[in-house]
Image (cartoon, rainbow, N blue to C red; front, side):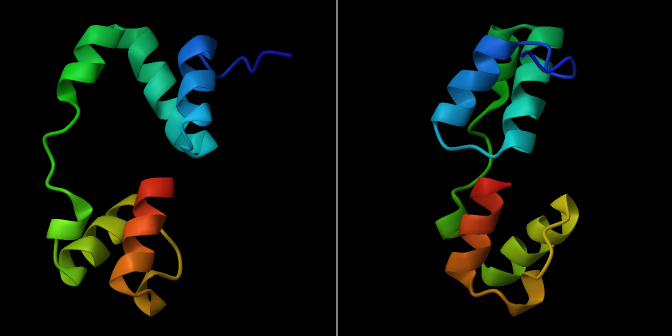
Length: 85
């Protein structure tokens, strides 16, 4: 049964198959439905790789997106949490 809050089911399923969380897949799918896939895909890739960021920068990003338990996480755990958010 389709989820009425997901505007582009095809994109949602594809992003979920790639391992993204439900929340992240929904954000991407809804943005793609609103603005068009080409426009959304052009925005990607402008941030530095998480591995190149300091632990402090990763912590700030985790705080910004609301990841709980971030203060107890190592750098690799912060990277994993941000990727799966």
